[in-house]
Image (tube, rainbow, N blue to C red; front, side, top):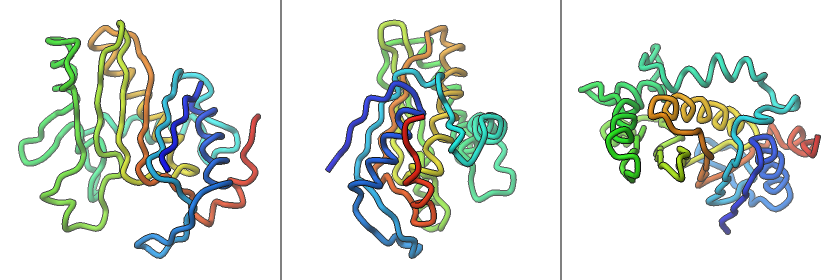
Length: 210
């Protein structure tokens, strides 16, 4: 059953979805033979993406998220990986298309556009390789002078990866909103398969209000 959470902050969203999955999540062994608890189609709307971004119970510090994850979304260098989000967003395909530049240009030309979108999925590659992007579709949309970002995530580790995703998306939204001169708005993630791996269950059980 789909789940919708309106979270005040990233930390609020993380605590609530981790507890929900641990309490009511279905059991599933994935194609890599990893056991998980999961829910389908989990939508989390983060009202304020820039307050309480990281918990001290999360495995990575805010410094690591800022230096490692956030900068990657804007770096077109693949750095010898099979792919990076920065490469797919800023140098997509054989023509090295910069989708973030396109989004900025589109919003400057037509602030009310519904076409300020970017994608990381490349069927020419991703139908035949093992390592494929989890964050697939990015939509930027203006609302009453604010710029919101919605992202479809096909598969999302809600304990280990979602806070990092939310942090990096916040920096991406900030980058675009500054260049189109709009206030930074909300972030919404739609995690089609929202899961927690078995090796994190013990730690996830201890997550609660701070």
